[in-house]
Length: 80
Image (tube, rainbow, N blue to C red; front, side, top):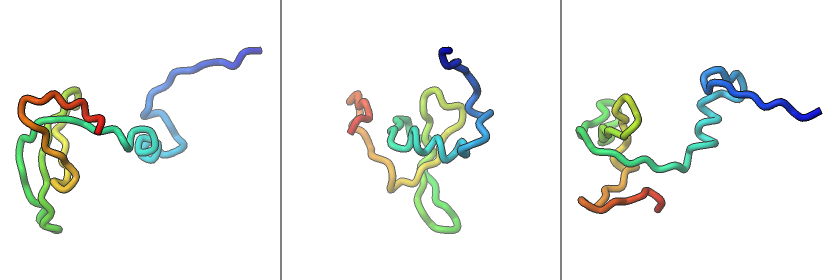
């Protein structure tokens, strides 16, 4: 008898923890976006950037030390 295939929502996963699973599956994927603002974490004094990424509803907040600035006008596919 062939094995059945199923479809389900990411949010319906009980185990492993969806956050752990997302890091395992997508941890090395690089995103590209437009900087909306620069701020500081008041507790650590770390500089943060607020980034708008296409297809993501909310702006993302990322440590400045973790971003790479792209050349203006250059279409970077985020592979490097």
